[in-house]
Amino acid sequence: MLKTKDPKIYNLIKKEELRLKNTLQMIASENSPSKEVLEALGSVFNFKYSEGYPYQRYYQGTVNTDEVEVAAEERARNLFKVPFVNVQPYSGSPANAAVQLALLKPLKSKIMGLSLAYGGHLTHGASVSFSGKLFKTISYELNKEGLLDYGKIKKIAIKEKPDLIICGATAYPRIIDFKKFAEIADKVGAYLLADISHIAGLIVAGVHPSPARYAHIITTTTHKTLRGPRGALIMVTNKGIKKDPNLSSKIDKAVFPGLQGGPHQNQTAAIAVALKEASGRSFKKYGEQVVRNSKVLAAELKKHGFNLVSGGTDNHLILIDLRNKAVNGAIAALALETAGIILNKNAVPNDQNPPFYPAGLRLGTAALTTQGMKEREMVKIAKWINEVINECPQILLPKTKGERKIIWDKFKKDIAKAEKLLKIAKEVKFFCARFPLP
Ligand code: DSN
Image 1 (cartoon, rainbow, N blue to C red):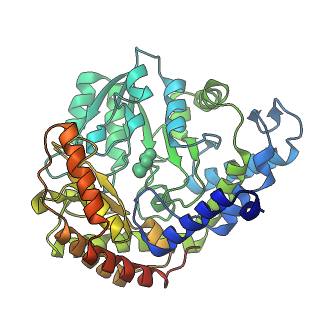
Image 2: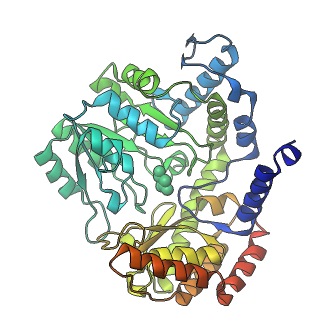
Image 3: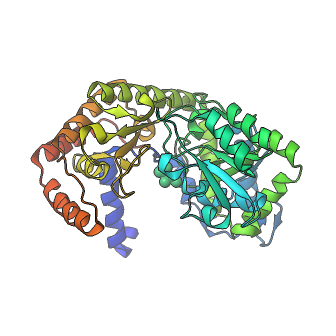
């Protein structure tokens, strides 16, 4: 037993269970999968090497592994209504890397994606990631209202002629118009990749439009709103196959042997379980409730005087711009953690701050909704968030890194003792007891 054989790790697991139980999980990219998903994840499929694809492996003993991978593929194809899927990517970044390896020529081809500073992902062409280092890149931003400006995106695409346009984001609270992106990509002859990692569960639940008719390729992680284990899928659409009949086999080759070795088949089994769960009626209700909760939370935060990027939300996440409150995002995120509210600091459009001290906060309702919270609970949570932000010092961050660190370290010490926040943390703990983890 772990408890006796490795008490250190056992105790850390128990402490993490307690932390999850006693605090509000509002990181927009997190969720709690079911016990059944975790059972598959911890299963004997963890042992198995199975390089290759079902019925064409480089290792023996894959008779059951093949069936698991085929089941996951079949479930994903049915759920997302696509003709082809690869379920092997270890996570979202390798999935996007594989797509880029399959479609693009290093140093020659050009990627166009949403800028990291405006809610894009590292792998959408950010200069610090492989995608920005291996390929030419050009980014698009949000407009003054915090919205995707399709007219401007079209102009950039016509001028820059990218080979791959990526739509999808990690911090965009509004509906993404995949049809408009498709018109732009088609006009310039680019491939369109829809990275739906954040919204996959909402698409399945029918509360966000699907890109299946419009994109050539779709990638998604499986652990966010989709509520599975960590992992990812790469899907090729009918439109993608029409553009390039060899696209599916290019994707397969890019994942293995191009990028990865043996697939994590325990993860594949868990993905299969999650996909079955997501195809049920209750998952549709779940997705609807996620969005309802998000909208109520946004409306309540606005009543408390918070500025929200784009003015609100259509999906599972909200981006607060704290500049009118004169509180830095890093300061706010740590104060909220002290009060038992877990979310992340985030850059907002036109953010002049360094990335470690951005001006905003990103929060989501996917995990809270899994625990059974509804509109009433969102009203309460907005009130707590407001109380915490009102307790935050309005510190003007110094320009140099060293000076910022001194202020940050002092703040960390002080905030851990802030009575008002510790009182809220107690209330949060009591409140959370009514909403157990799955
Ligand atoms: N880290 C993920 C998120 O929080 O959105 C993206 O990879």
